[in-house]
Length: 443
Image (tube, rainbow, N blue to C red; front, side, top):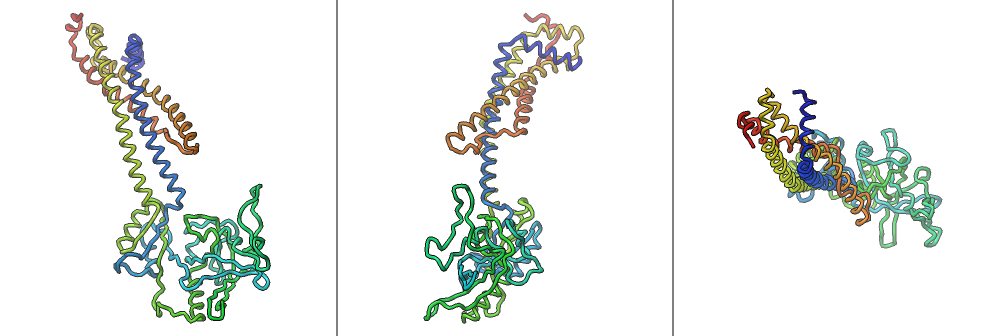
């Protein structure tokens, strides 16, 4: 029997009993909707977790600390941090250093007309671009630059205030006007000469111990995941910052606790080449006795929870599909009893047994396929409705409650068809086993 004849015959048989076929298809529709909608809610939840983690910043960054290691790990020195580069999957590693012995102020203009403040952060110059800072204006420092070449945060210029004016006219805040235009600050970091001043209070008042001119070559975009320095801070090459601090300590007569020992750091940053490498790198670093933190750790835990929720929701939805499978099996069994004589005639006329079996399997698959198609269409409508209503209730239209990707729609369609075939297999085999004589005698 040709496939076209088989399909036409199966379709005609289903049409003959429209009421029963519709009811059975309805069961498949409900089953398909249940399992697809349940899984779609899990998919939406998984995506919301990813969006949440994406807002937390770069997932390839790993923070390394020497706190709480109980002496098991070596102090974080330049040599130790450089060894992290040997771990497979590491793109760059650098200490992060904030001066421990001075709080610098900034000055520019004639007779220091404009003064300001700003956190200074030391990072290896080679790691600046790889670390993920994004230049808004200017460029990154390079090997041709002289000492104390820096980049600054997006709102660095607004740190400065005019010492010749009284509040509130002595400063400009980075707040746009009603037209969305940012006010112009007093200072242009890329053009003006800026100095770092290291002062200390003495019995005779504040005393200037060190003054160092810096050259700003780039302004970076604000990124909270990288640190406050991207907002208004100063980022300097690590060697320059350590040198500056030691010079200040010498002039201010501050004792160096290191006593000539290697420079140690409280924190380092390791950047992986890919998110998939993060877990392996963390394991390697923690095996050396260091503590680590990465947004990926939270992401993995949230992913596990999302997968578990998807499995639970999918399991609940599959209950309805099991019920529809029983309905299909019942429908096909009833069809065999009603068409016993027809089966006998087909056998007498020489119809092959596999054709008879395939006919019933095609009918069962047709019920599953039709129910799946209609069910998927309904699911898309329900998903749109859920997202619309949910967005209006939460006030966040961008938050999806249900997401049906293409793979889920294909899976729902294939699964409903497979359920139809499996449910119809036993009745089809039973139809084949009926003898021609008993079938003709059947009332």
